[in-house]
Image 1 (cartoon, rainbow, N blue to C red):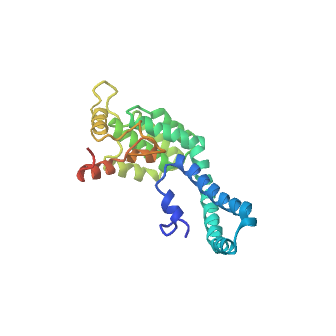
Image 2: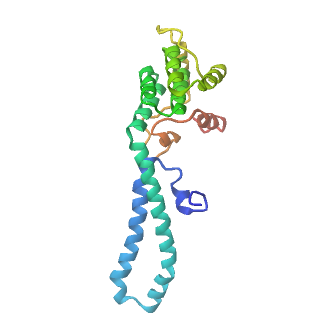
Image 3: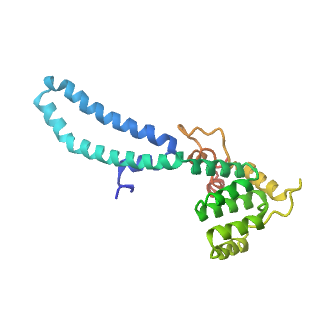
Length: 226
């Protein structure tokens, strides 16, 4: 298959931020084209050994270019998805929740626009965890069930039982849940706005600024978290 570590190109790009992907693949394609063009420009002066050496490389270059073209096509599919307004809105909303903002209206908009139910559930859970509950939860819950079907009552009940979903008890200043999340975020450096996605030195580059909690815990356990 194309996407496996046996493919040197995939091994080189699998950990890149999406912003790095296009320039990297374009650079590889340009390099192959330049090698062909340099040979064509110099072939009149090439020796028999030069010709023989290049001809031996042609199958490898052809296969590399074929694989490269496939990866470029896949990258275009990824870019279309990440450039699409629903993805951009969701990314902005998720990042806002991680920063401690309340985004109940964004979740309601996702339901109104009939976005995939699992994406809405993920957003609800993120709101609940980062803000110690979801504002207007009962109203949003009713709207969700009416839009996506009563079979999701079991999913919601399971998430509530696991502590992933709950309603916001208070809008007041004593937001202990938000405070807990902010303390956790600050202590483990879960967000890093200064990370350079083109020359990364922190795992937060993968999502353009957020480091997964699981990674930070592993770093801390390994003594690599500072």
